[in-house]
Length: 328
Image (cartoon, rainbow, N blue to C red):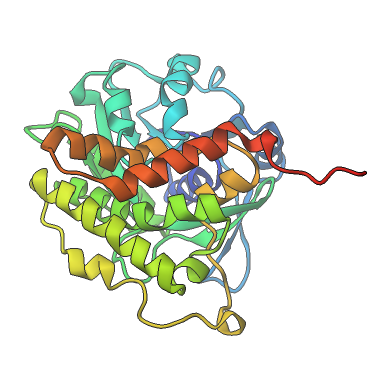
């Protein structure tokens, strides 16, 4: 199997490294030139929560574009959702008549963007139940699977009725699992995507606005109240789409106890928090914004999600207008 990771940041790196360990031919493509150079020269080093020692994996190539890679069997798309179409157009040489493009991106909307460029037979969707942070060029920290999930990756063809490339998905799952990242091709992947979306909706926008760890916001009574309303709206929208979502389960994820910061070993700062800190565009339109959009389709009001969206958009449009004290 020849695979390209289009968007080989932290999450792309952990997926690609495990895919390589599973025996696939793997190429990293990412616009972060320093990271790609480090991977090409010294490999990708993973500090995994489950391992005592770092693991270094040498992939078959790492570059800022796919010009030298050629046509792949599968392209795993992990760029930010708003960069999807640009990334596809700039790396057209990766895609042949039998290439499958699979979105493992945050939120919802990535597969729809791919469908603008490829027919449904060639598009897949998925979700990661794993974590990774880029701690230096060529070096990540993370876990290939959350403790509560039996698999680190779920995916499926966008078209579930007699998908012509199901063997690609099955081999991808086998390679990832063999490499240490349990994966499954599952026809209920949309449910898994929305299950993760609920938690992203609850935490990510607030983290971007406040630049706080999840442990801090979920341990504050006002954070708990807001998160529970965001979860309620999201579950109502999901149910209108025909998905079975347990509102109380998600609302119960927060507020069970206050957080003693001295007892927390590792604080979880979500990617949107880091985007805000580094004054980058966020994926708010594909997370909370997706709930607002779907709510409008089904006639369901989503004022809490809409407010979070509007505030994050104001923030990211005015990063460089913040108050700074002036010398008198």
